[in-house]
Image 1 (cartoon, one colour):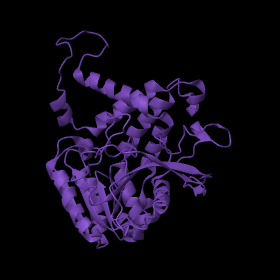
Image 2 (cartoon, rainbow, N blue to C red; image 1 turned 135 degrees about the vertical axis):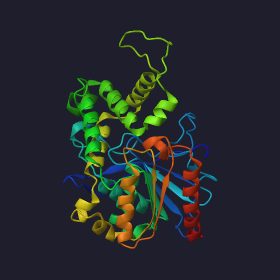
Image 3 (spheres, rainbow, N blue to C red; image 1 turned 60 degrees about the vertical axis):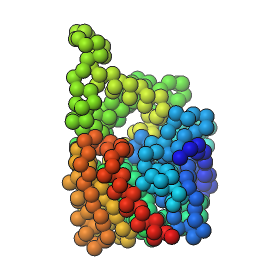
Image 4 (cartoon, rainbow, N blue to C red; image 1 turned 90 degrees about the vertical axis):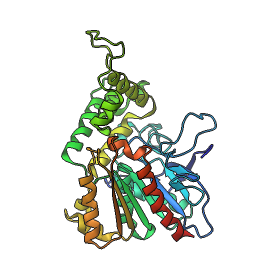
Length: 373
């Protein structure tokens, strides 16, 4: 993909939020890849998952090691081919990578928003993304796609703006979180809010980071994103020193890996953003929101064609949850392709190199590209 440059879009019109509050103004960080065609018909919006951001592909001139989180999927000649599509990545509202969020300055106090930043939902993100599309002069997306929480946004696009997208690619998703998943999120949040350096969400004023809480939240999350087979294959029960030390220090390779991931995450992610985004995951439930509890009724508002993909080893968002989406789409006689990929990596498989998975996305988007021509 080469070197890319992030951009900032500023919005002065108020944005009403699902929580009942509104933002008088806000900004969104985004990146674009490829070229928008004359008809403005070849744009694809890629929505990020919990810990993602707008940096989907390529590198930065001042930091060539910072490769986009879906660089294996997006770029010239790749499944999301930037020789054919104009691809947009955006850091969601409430994020911590350039978009307005808890670490941004609250104009009414001249201090970081902190705990005062309003809760946002998937619906709010989609409304803000629609504003970015307007800013870029895009009336209709060829496709909106994402994995995990990003896939939930693609689903919401098909409901909130059914006439503004032709295709929705819903990968490694669920129509709502299971009780167990909400439980995982709450444990992660408690790790953060009980960190003495959290200060009720206003840790910025104390020039500290709730590092311990963020580390624990990430370690817990990372375990759930991987399958048991993947962890056993990668780490087994290998000891760093080859023998037991009979201490609470790091002994097993898996312990070292999780601590490394936790440390790295605590340096780059805002604690309040983590809380807000996990709550957005918990709240997502279009069946309850507009279908009276019936997913088929909720998806009757959609008009897009769908690609739904799941992974056999994903126990956090299992294939059965994707099949719920497929059934609801078929109930409405909507065009839907479904694939269950045999992959060992667990939920994180949607980020990995896998020939069958990448060929599936490439084949589907080839058809989309032909429609744009």
